[in-house]
Image (tube, rainbow, N blue to C red; front, side):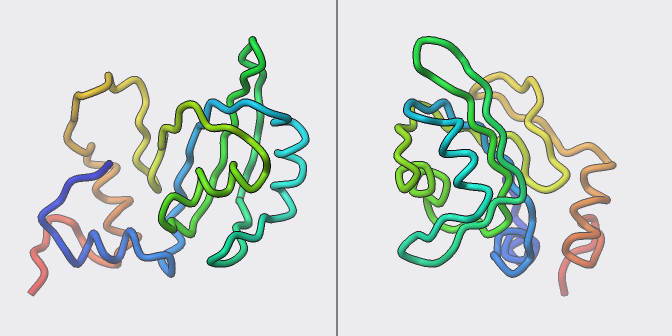
Length: 135
């Protein structure tokens, strides 16, 4: 989750046409290895095709898996719908990165300011410095 008062920057970063990569890790139940294999070819949802940039799966134990999915579309509840279409139950879903911004080990309920490198990288994505107010 990124917080900003710069509406233009927020729009540019979140609009599907920007193609900003988002990485999610879902704790899922079901045939995650089979689902990951199918997902790599794309999954058709009611609002179009979801073609992930990357998909990986790791066993977590007790019938659970960690499914990591990198997408760029950013449609509403896209990852949950994607998993449901693949026959997976989602127990937990966390966005671990948004473009160049990584969640890292940030504790639940805590926040941090962007690093200068993240600000520069996000600025490149929107075509201007984040330090420059939009006229």
